[in-house]
Image 1 (tube, helix red, strand yellow):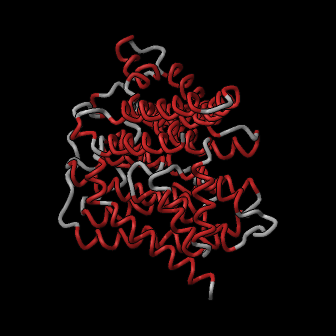
Image 2: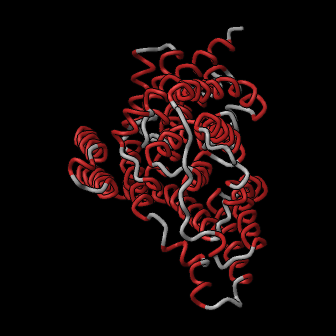
Image 3: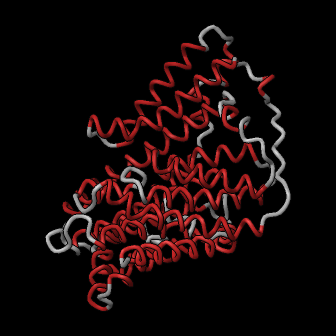
Amino acid sequence: MTTFIIIIFIIGYLAIVFEHQIKTNKAASALLTGVLCWIVYIMMGDNTPIIIEQLTEHVGELSGILFFLLAAMTIVELIDAHDGFDVITSRITTTKKTQLLWIIGLITFFLSAILDNLTTAIVMVSLLKKLIDDKEDRLLFIGIVIIAANAGGAWSPIGDITTTMLWIGGQITAGSIIIKLFIPSLACLMVPMFILTFKLKGNTNRPVITDSISGNPTTEFERKLVFFLGIGAFVFVPIFKTITHLPPYMGILFGLAVLWIATELIHNRKDDEKKDTLSVVNALRKIDVPSILFFLGILLAIASLQSTGVLTGLAHYMNDKIGKLNIIVPVIGLLSAIIDNVPLVAASMGMYHISIYPQDSYIWGFLVYCAGTGGSILIIGSAAGVAAMGMEKINFIWYLKNIAWLALLGYIAGILCYIGLEHL
């Protein structure tokens, strides 16, 4: 049974990689892969009620990610409809590629630590659409955004879901993970940015906005209000989670509801045509639904690997055959570029018990870094990458040729930093 599921997963993965060659949208391939994996599992399994219970549990977890993504993308579309990003783009005056690279990279790195890597990627990709017209240049910058979002999320207890998992589980403390991982995470970003600094030449051109601010039926107050309410909704998510203990998607849905009411009130006197273009309903129409379905499909497929014990078995196999943490943990990070880092980290938490490896032990910080940043090596290896892939229609092969090697060098640099700092 597990062999059939692994074969289906590999074929589905290849279909996603070569979507342009086979002329099939990656969302369709991902959905088919996810459903087929569960069909094989339930048809060949011997306990249907338990399998259905596992599926229900996984769908419950996945729905939180999907609702978060839906709400976050809606807020970004709403800000964009109001030209709210002009609050930032008007202050970024440089057109020199190297300067803009460092500004975007560092903003993403620190913003990801405050928000999370998925939210930050969505915001920054939307921002880059306003700053860079040339598609090839913009894709290179988006590649750095993915690396920076994942690196920035790794050193903050609220920046990445795996970091939060280990923080809540008691394996790490907030202060310790910030101190241990800030320099390795920064190195993970600095290496790719230094390399690109020598490769990028000249200036960027800003896109010509046909629906400019002068033609937009909003006032400066309305633009700023929607922008700050939208960004405030993102920033409020970790605060909401801390206060209520409810999952992040509830916080972002709360923020969307507030923004929805606010926009209805400030535009209630406008005519119907203008009001519709600035409404949440219109923003929802513009959401990239195939990207959300792609998320669902790929996560369902990975959930089947988790439920059948493939991931746990893989973790134990590496522990038995390799045994050395300085090899096992980086391999887990590399695997997170192919398989979602959440089940990999969950399997590792079960394998390396806290009674043997106490809070803030060497392994936990290392696991946080590798699982958090290894996903940058492939575009579908992280939530930030998948979101950017959907928003800009980035080709898997293009990313593999142009960004993967940069992300890998940064990943290795961070590993060397972490090991070196631990042995000082």
